[in-house]
Amino acid sequence: MDCNPLLDEDEFGYDIATFLACTQHIQYIKTGGLAFISDYQGDAEILTDPQVLTHPSVNQGKDTFGDGNIENEVSMFEKKHVCNDYCTWSGFGLARLPAVLEEPEASQ
Ligand SMILES: [Zn+2]
Image 1: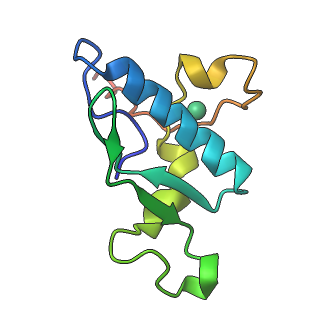
Image 2 (image 1 turned 30 degrees about the vertical axis):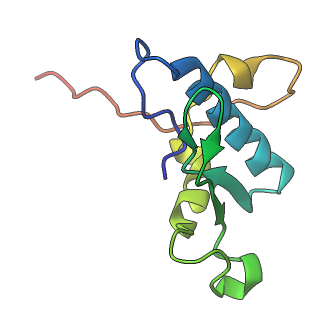
């Protein structure tokens, strides 16, 4: 239920996971910030068990997609999503999201 790849850069499938993170960005924008698909699982050929996450405003906050719908993730998408090379490819026309990254601790 994260909007960023859970794999490390050197792990098999990282590039696919990065592309899927970009598709979440596209879904989020195309739905006006109301939804994206998460929890992609599977292998290089088949994806299984996706979960649609919707914003709390969808369906007046009534249960839309079961317990797996973690509305807060949609509310926080613009702060948590870190754009990758797919997102910034000009063909998609996506604006880079202002993801909030951990700030380095101030040295004293
Ligand atoms: Zn992005």
